[in-house]
Image (tube, rainbow over all chains, first blue to last red; front, side, top):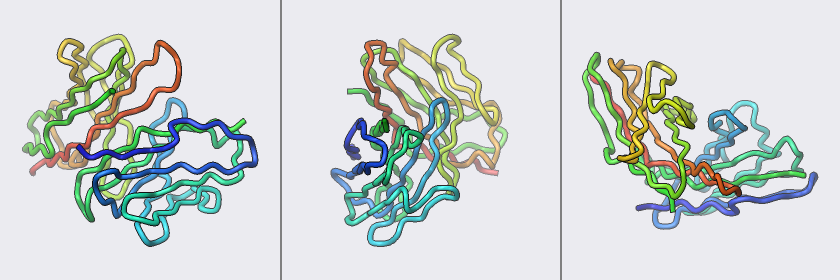
Length: 116
Length: 117
């Protein structure tokens, strides 16, 4: 089946630095990818919807200058956490929609970010 | 490697009838199991989870799921479907990680539930 690869699986970075997380659809084209964040003991929270070739649509309350999303190709979207703070430590997960308007969505396996 | 299977792309059920959305999983250790729902143009919402204890787990909006270890299944159920239950449902598994380290979450591909008035 289709695979969404997310990299890195876990990362530790220092406060003030930036870290990039990649989300790749390995065997299908994804015009739309989604980025989620999960706080401990809470459900996934949609951060933004990433559309290939256009600006991402951010959910209310998500700082677009802090969480930079780039969907440069049909198989790659990146999330960059800029000037990371310890409160940005979380589990980040991406998903990719098959085709333009399909119902099938594949998830990456998530990335654990720890900011120290 | 862990995996989740949702064998049905779509489930159709008449309003008022019971519904079941199937999920089977594979994990090397003991699992944490989750169900999420996604309504159109919304992010995933948590429905319920199995961590330990009773195999029958009750969650939001009248949904429940039964953990069956021998069949490695975690089917989502509701006694009486509502039209408003129509949405995309995702099953997910995470290794409990008793041996330590970071545990990845694996999602199924989703099942579209259509409740017919």
